[in-house]
Length: 98
Image (cartoon, rainbow, N blue to C red; front, side, top):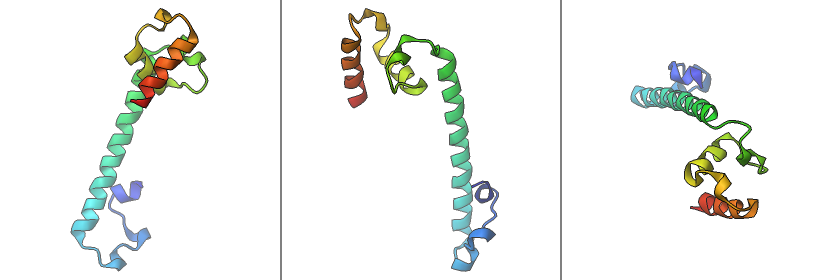
């Protein structure tokens, strides 16, 4: 992918397919944008991990990872206000289906 962002299209033989330079430049720009978005995603995931402690009770639910846990906590708030795990899970399912 990095070679696309650098404009090296020789390994794909794109030039042999008679693509115009404008199309090849678009591919290069889209590859650069993909790298930018991937880096932004990585930084957001790091920020979320810093905000939600790994020992939070939400992570006792099987299958709940950092991103899903943060999304649930952002919508639910304090999970201790639920009388049981079942009532919390009902809300979580409702949130995830929205």
